[in-house]
Length: 385
Ligand SMILES: *Cc1c(COP(=O)(O)O)cnc(C)c1O
Image (cartoon, rainbow, N blue to C red; front, side):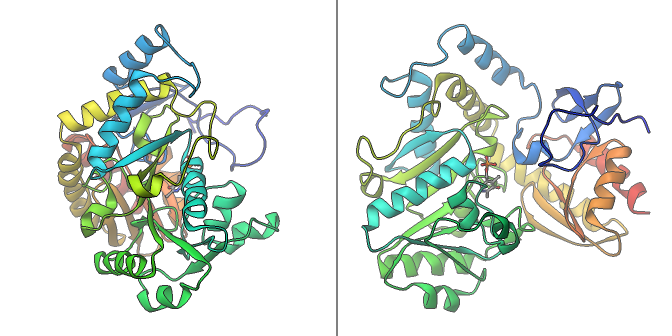
C-alpha cells in the first residue's frame, strides 16, 4: 500500500480511520503525502465544485485576507451584499439572504424562521424519511434517520417524518401544529433518492393550500450540481425558503438561507444572529465561485458532463443502474459492496464515496474533463471486474 494511515491522532473518533492524508489538490486531481496522484470524484462531499485550488477563488481569498477579514454583522461589507444579490437572482428573486457557516446552520435558520413565521402553536417541520439535514440537535431530529437519533434523545420537539414521493402521506401529516415542509430535491446522503417533479409540485400546492412554508434543503443539490442552479428548478416550483452551503465557498465554510421577502420579514433584529456568518473572507470566496459559475455556465456544463458520466457508468459491467441528476450520481452495483468498491477505487487512485451497502456516489467537480471521466471509468472498470 502506498497510502499512509494517520499517525495515532489527536482527533476524536467521529470518523472511520482516515486511509489517506492529502496534501495538495488542483482541479480534479489530489496528491497524498507520498506523492501518489488521485482523481477526486467526490469533491469533499460536493463542496469543491470548481475543483481544488481554483485560481480565481484562491486570488479572491488571498486578496480579501489582505483587505478585511471581519467586522461583525453590525456593519455591512461589500462581498456579502454582492453574494446575497446574486443568490437572490439565481433562486428566482424577491427574497433576502441570511448567511451562516454550514448546511446545518442554514437549516437551523430555516427552522427558526418557520417557527417565528407560523406563530407559537404551529412549530412542527415535516421532513422525509431517509433525509439528511445536519447534525445539530434540531437538524438531527429533522434528519429522517431514527438510528442516528437514538443515542441523543431527547431531541428538540417539532419534527415528523413522512415517506418520500407519497403525497397522501404528507397530506395526512399536515395537522394544525405544522409550520413547514423541508425537503431535499434529491435525498443525497440518504442514497441519492430523487423526489419526483410531480411530488414537489404536489408539496408546493399542499403548502399553499394549508398555509404552511415550502422549504427546500439545497445544501448538496444547490449551485449547479444537478444541472440547474437549484434542484427545485427541475420541477418548476417556487419554494418559500431555500438553504444552501456545500459548494458556495468551494471549500471555504459558508452557508446561506434564502427566504421570500414576506416570509423573511418574520425575522426582526435580535431574532437570529451569528458571529462569523457572512464575513468577508467567506463571502469573497463565494462571490468568486458565483462569478465563475455564471460566466462559464456551470449548470449546463454539469448537465453535459453528468450525461457522459452516467452513460459510461451504465455501460460498466457490475453496475446495475444509475440514479441522480447532473453530477450528483449514484451507481447501484450488481454484486459488490459500495464501501468495498470505494476503498478499492481509492487504492487505485480514484476518490468516490461508498454511499450505501450496494451503491457508490460520484460528485466530481462540475468542470471535470472528458479525459478525467474516461480515466475514472477505466479505474472503476478494473475495480468492479
Ligand atoms: C451536508 C448536508 C447538510 C449539513 O451540512 P453541514 O455543512 O455538514 O452542516 C444538510 N443538508 C444536506 C442536504 C446536506 O447534504
